[in-house]
Image (cartoon, rainbow, N blue to C red; front, top):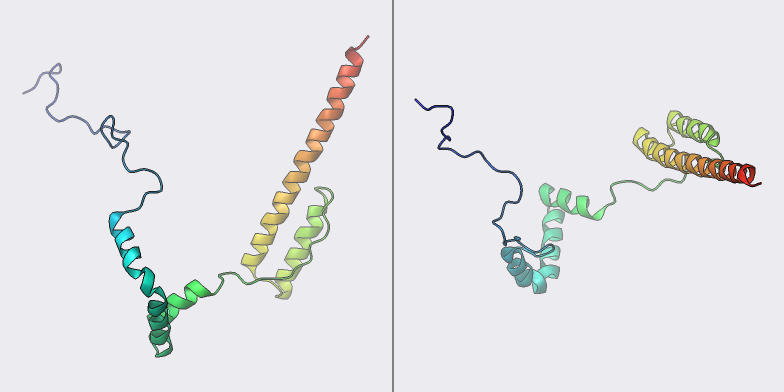
Length: 149
């Protein structure tokens, strides 16, 4: 039986740098040797490989078709949507209302509306910050004017 003063034979796992002192590991941006070799070998055959992939997809290979479509087509569709002009944070209410109306009319999807609402929210926050800075500048100028004899 061990006494309380004796150190345990198993040391606890240490956290922090995974390398020993002086060993900084791989440089940022460096590539794995296998990846560099593969890229070098495929460099001259990239066009042939893409042609072959297209050939498989056109022949009915569903997996290859999904792979190519996932890489070639944009994930989001481009939408045209006129947001009301936002000169003050209160104008965001009209912008949010127009987004909600477009969703209910089926013009845009709920996920597209969420993206637009995020843009409106960012614009509203920027307007709020600009308003606070203006008001603070006015208060500082007034305070400095009152301190002058």
